Length: 293
Image (cartoon, rainbow, N blue to C red; front, side, top):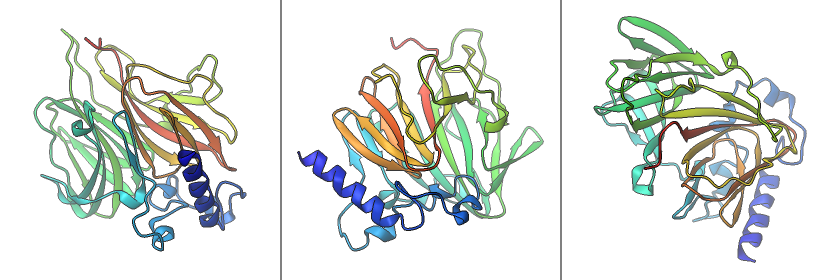
């Protein structure tokens, strides 16, 4: 009963916060003119809407999942990065085997390198960054990404404010297989078949055995939902890029919106349904191509 009451309270807060747009209203002309993924940094239910509720947060941490919402994301200087603050959202202390964090780059910012043996994927959410690898430079704008294999020399720089999401994990090698760097964008990836499902799926990395994780981009139109109530050995790190909906994690049901981050441990029951008047899109980390033993 308590969980249902809390669900009603949060849905009421969403409705209060959505004067221009939200769960029950049509998208405004202003929102249509905004940059892609602008809601990640400007959520419908923003920290300012909670200022009269001291101590309240939608964030939840449990042994098999976590929901980390914008009002409780804590930024601090990133180690070995210059003029960059970060919010670590998923780390091994939770039980994960990967790290997920948001990095906010300021003027004249520059990345550090991950530890030895650690691979990295970056995805641009706001602004733009320059990726330099072995003398080659790539301009990455919103919706662009790059995969950097372990021990691969590179730098990420920006001369203006930018926001990226970063995934890092210690690479699990297979004999004679070496992953190659990847620089691309979501719109260059084909839609894949999803038997038994109606959402749209793109995979950002090759599916070959050299890669031990992938990043999925999943799109749901309003009212669409996962047909399968998933329970599996894979871990997930999720960032909701657009829209809003309801996420089931274990026995709990959470209203979620753009800017929310979710960690899912192995075998936690999980399900998503999209609400509102606009598309839901989320970015999902998933470990692949390796035995759990």
